[in-house]
Amino acid sequence: MKMFLKIDFASLLKHHCLVFVFAGLWGIMRFAYAEIGDDAMITFTYARNLVEGNGFVFNPGEVVYGTTTPLWGLFAALGLKIGVAPWTWTLCWDVIFGGVVLWRMREILGAVDAAVFFPLAAALVVYGSAYTLRHAGMETGCYNALIWSSLAALVCRRAPWRAIFWAGWAMALRPDGIAILAVACVYAVVRLWGERDWRPWATSAAPLAIPGVFALALLLYFGTLIPQSVVAKSYVTHRASHFHQFWYLLVRGIIWNMGVLNVSALFAVFGFGLWIRDRTLRPVALFVGAYIGFFVVGRAPAFPWYYTPLVLVGCLYFVIGGLAVARYLVERCGARMPNPRVAFPVLYACLVLAALLPQLPVMTTFNRGAFLVMGPELHHHRYREIAEAINRESKGAARMAGLEIGYFGYFLEGHVFDTCGLVTPASIEAMKTGTHPLLVADSEWYVVPTWSSDLSRDEAEIADAAGYTLHSKWDWPGGWTYVFRRPVKAVAPPPAPAG
Image 1 (cartoon, rainbow, N blue to C red):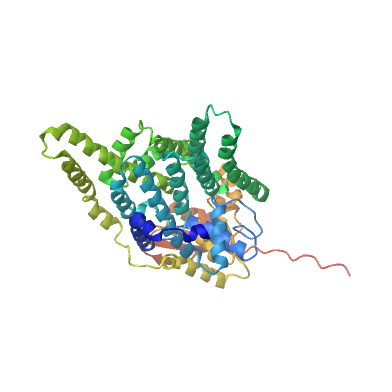
Image 2: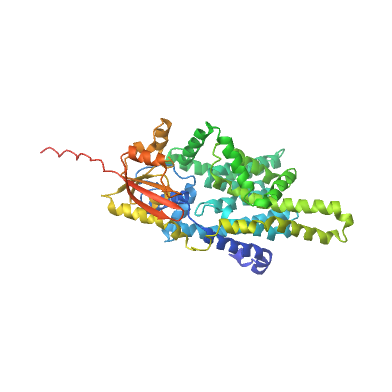
């Protein structure tokens, strides 16, 4: 308490006021562009069932490791416990995590003598926030805060245990956090190599208990360390690789990531290539390589939200790359300039404007729906309405099959069969034998969302083969949701007891 009272809040506000300002703008953008993703709703369903006493499960009675972030599910359950909707809980915390990311970015820029350009870096993050956290409601904000905290500890050459501490929590939050943990451990070994005293080694290794304890808890509860969702996505990508699509998806994903900021991506690529040899920023460069390598090994390049941390790192490299370009031009042309010190910031500002201004109409075009609906809960109203209709028309607990199962898992009063295999292992087993998962589902309802006005021929044929007939069609901006139904299989009553 005494330490808390000694905090100089005036000094804190003076040195970090820009962090607070841009974190607030980040928050406005998060709520403006927020549309809660289906994957986030899967984790929220785990949280809701836990709070309701059904255990940490998606379908009550089925213990399946179907979320890649059970730690975030427990955190969402805390919000539900105190009466806050999980999507609102997440978006509010995203503002805090965004402030942490900006704070750490400021520290890293200070370590490379570029702190004066922090406003530009912060503006880039806020400017592209609709992309840097594309799937609202997920753990991405917290994950980025942990990654940037670990990177800041490495770049600023703080005690090795600090980087491992934040990286350990990152790995506990998401499996791909192993990339940043590996980078932190490598740098810890390099820093401590030749140290004969065992105590620094023990102190640095102590934070490894965080992912260790978490892995033990997963093993005891789910019986596995590999999420079912990872198995499903990896299997789908393995199937695609047989048609030579894997490397296409990987290259396309990397190009998409580096091209998110459009013209400014040129600065990002230049900055990465130039500063990869710089000792101070070497941990950041190593993290980029390790993170991409993780998904190459996992053969899961087709899911762009995994690249979110790389987008934020791209913002940093954009600043550094632009800085390097400006310095190079000033050095080459400095002799012909009346005052190179004045010319440098002017030239840098011109380069930045030249990179950013062409993007304004592009951003406006692709995000013309921003700010039309400020309440994120309204974005999934169509799924709530369909789930409520199925609940009303079902005799007893509803049984539904479908692909986008997060929303229905949360709003449906019954059982959800996932035809993609994220939470239903039977789907993967069926696909391995060449059988469509719907043919092994014991479900009365089948729901298919489409991004056009017509149902695909394949979907219509498989629904017909499984005995479903079209029940209703729901319109929503950008497409339709088809609801199929089939007669419930009769179940013989149990025999009456003798006597």
